[in-house]
Image (cartoon, rainbow, N blue to C red; front, top):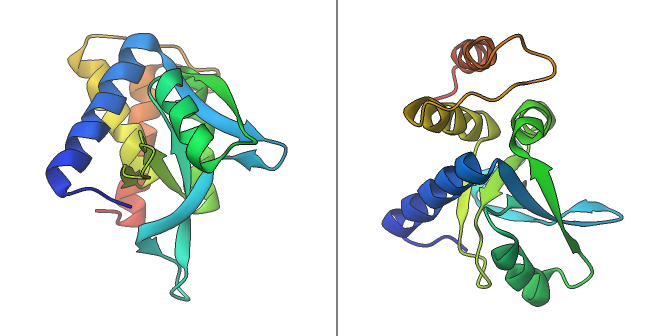
Amino acid sequence: MLKNTTDHNTTHRKFVSDVIETEIVWVLEDDDGCANLDSDTYETKTGEPEIVLCYWSDAKSARLCSREHWPNHTVGEIPLSDFMENWCVGMQSDGVIAGTNFDSKLNGTEILPLDLLLDLFEALNRNNKEISFEHYPSQDAFKQLALGIKNDAGVE
């Protein structure tokens, strides 16, 4: 499912750049939840593939993937602040992996949710962009909390 590392990094950087610009993350949803697949990279403690929840930086790419792999799903949008505050934190808590910008051949990026969250914070800072969060007094306070969790967990 994964492309070579160069393509993987390029598609992930595009995801981060695009969602920072638009402040929207795209998802495929049905009654059972959002589009997911088995990880090629991460395994559970029992050796089973981790679950990867898939997200896109544009609706068109999500729709193309839907036609091939998730025909009963509909395209939905998530505000970036909600994605960061609730979805990334929830994925980290649930022990699932985030997948960004998968194509119709299911080539894309698998990333730990906390690493995705930190990538988004870095891009916001690089672009001098500030967004508000419901549960955190500032973007920096949320980022510092995420860094603390990463350090406490010993996540590389």
